[in-house]
Image: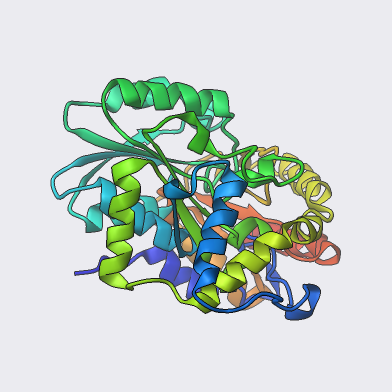
Length: 361
């Protein structure tokens, strides 16, 4: 039976429905008139063009590329190729819920390793090593880290990849937000796919380029893992539609224009949120240097019987028309993820109302 992914269901019900949205974690979707129309044939050749574009962007052989319907689909496809029932899978915490839900759905036992708040949520390979056993079959991380927005340099991911390789364990990196850490938003400059044959990466054009509705995702993997991913697609969908492939190839041709659109005022808005957080004596802030979201936690535990952070934020949506994501969906009940993808002229008012929500009795 499919395990309900609580965050995704909550997001479909809440995100985008508040006047002041501090919950949406990606660049706003572009309008059809912001790009030229598709100027290539929409036929069976499109699939090869999409594979070629993804491979070029990630600087990997085309044989390593498996297109998917967005990153969520890529996660399921990749983990289906890597995980068997009874396997032990190490997953970071705090964690984006599907990183936990998918291996559990596949019958694996998920073992969390901590991204420590006192270490600014940085990825520490020694924390992974301390949890590895002979039963460990996969290690899973995100970069940028979701929910904190903290960036992991390729050097650190390389150390972790080596640690995993020495034990014969694959490393799965959800890098849908990684391009935010590159000034040019280039994919290859930030992808972990270059770090070793045991590294499997999933990503898409969804979050950094505003192409969410088009579901242009991919898995990058080597050898038998890529073959297993293709077998999964063959079993479940046969092949992706040529319309999807043509759209994906078209978007890659116009990535420069989408990049320019995505980066407008992003750093300035991040600084304004950081300044607002610095004035909140009740919160600790993850202080990300890249991207468009971060994570705050209460400095003091809530009194017994007090309203939960989730209930408070949902009440704030109803009463003040502002929304942030409850930390409970990432395993931190006293936290909240705050994003700044909304228009620049609405950010200050959104933060003001969020403050009212947090301060209300």
